[in-house]
Image 1 (spheres, rainbow, N blue to C red):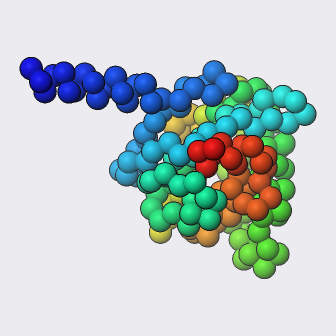
Image 2 (cartoon, rainbow, N blue to C red):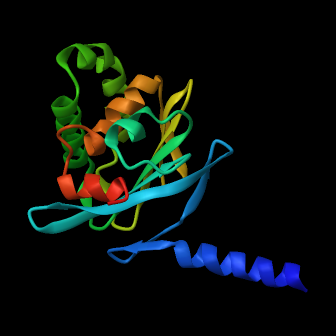
Image 3 (cartoon, one colour):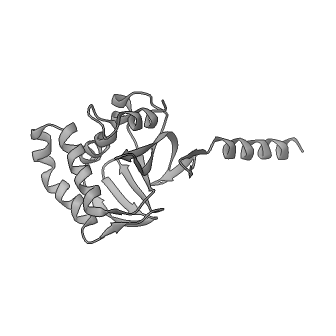
Length: 186
């Protein structure tokens, strides 16, 4: 009987720990490449006073500094829950700008072919629809796995590319300061 009570309490506590941000329910835990990850933090990306997406950062263990989150070994995920229809070209332009702001010219030169491969994944999409979920998974030794609504778009090699992509949200010049704070559990 005590085991049943313990299981019920555990299930209740896991459900209670799920986070809701701007109407989007985020799981406390996810599995990526067979590895368990915990929700590190989340926040809303706004542009011109409009909420564009809810971002959630999943790591093997919770981190409160950008350096630790970027250097975290193991599988990682940043998940974007799109709140409104947005042209894919606009999203890619914002990603490009974020990478340029947070990475050196030398790093960007090395990453250029992979940045082009990343952009190619989204070409022809037209629009990212509201309620879509974009996941960028970082898998050590593989690099980036990109998916929309659970359907894999493709992969981009290199752990360095994944760190450069994460720098859009966690770098010295993040897309939005309060979003970075939220992703780091603030």
